[in-house]
Length: 131
Image 1 (cartoon, helix red, strand yellow):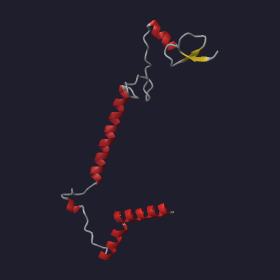
Image 2 (cartoon, helix red, strand yellow):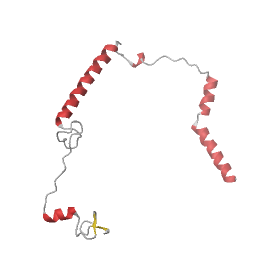
Image 3 (tube, rainbow, N blue to C red):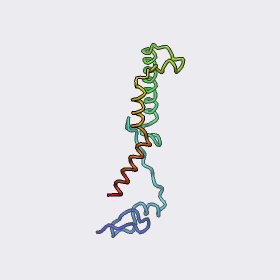
Image 4 (tube, helix red, strand yellow):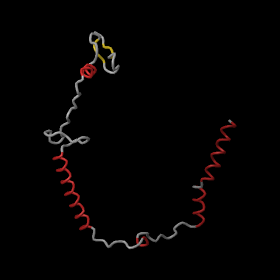
């Protein structure tokens, strides 16, 4: 009683005493394969819509609940925000004073320079090759 692959489809395993798998037998007889109907995961009473988890009734109910929740959230946001609309970007960008002296700025720029980092990497590579 060993398991072997079906000689027709070579996909399904069958007992060595059987000729073909159940699926091949069904196809050879000409029977139509029936599709399993998925039930709604919410109510478990009605069949689910193709490609969805829920039936039509449950989907409509969920969409109605989401619409009500979104409308309430928008009303609350509009009521709580009693702010004048911004007319230009100048109002948003704060004025920043130059707090970094020129000399320190040059040092920072040199520390962050990609050219300097590239040169350091080349020097490191040359040192590694010499060793």
